[in-house]
Each structure stands twice: as structure tokens, then as C-alpha cells.
Length: 136
Image 1 (cartoon, rainbow, N blue to C red):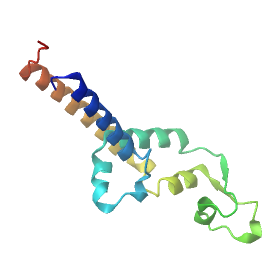
Image 2 (image 1 turned 120 degrees about the vertical axis):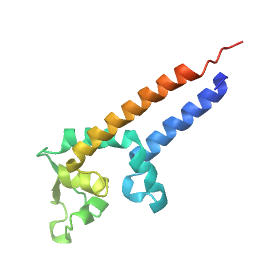
Image 3 (image 1 turned 90 degrees about the vertical axis):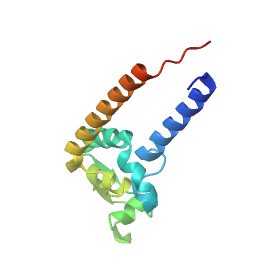
């Protein structure tokens, strides 16, 4: 882009799309079927999945499901154990991301992030080699 205003606008769009498709704004299970393509081509999604599962995968902390919350119903708790319903951190992550994120995707996460780095490096090299914008 030749001017700073266009670059600033496109930068905001890029950041917004990254956050939107990473699972920060809308969790993966709530995407419409046609929009799931963005979830699979966005590098930030793979970074988030890797961070979540490298941090929380084997954590033994129990997570309390409050009465009549979505997590409470996900655990299939009944009213007899109204205040005493607990799940594991793995169950909470599965609930929160709708089963879309998995620790078994670690190889895919690393591979896609590596691929995105190569694409970014090649794209940067190409732009520096072929485009010569000067501010005059």
C-alpha cells in the first residue's frame, strides 16, 4: 500500500480476522458451517490450540460447575448434587471449545504454524524483491 491510512485500516482488519477466527471472539462450535473454512486456515487458531493444550491438558485441578450453568448440564449433573458438581480441566476445555480443539492435534498445530512461517517469509521476500514503493 502506498499510504499509511490504507495500511492502518488493513492492519486492523487483519488483526480482527485473526482474533475472530482464532476462537477468542466466537468459540469454534458456534461458527456457521460456511465460516469454518476461516477457522482451518487461520494460524492464530493453531497457536491458541497449542497454548491451551500445552498449558491445560494434564492439569488435575477440578472445575466446579455451578448449578444450572451450561457446564453443569454438559457434565450431566442432576439436582441431587446441586452444589457438588465438578469436572476436570480437560472436560472444561472440551466444553468451552465444543470438542473442536484437541491435544491430539499437536502435530497439526506445529506443522501449520511452521507452514505459515514459511509462507510469511516467502511473501516478505517476494514483496521486498518485486515492489519498490517510495514515498515521494
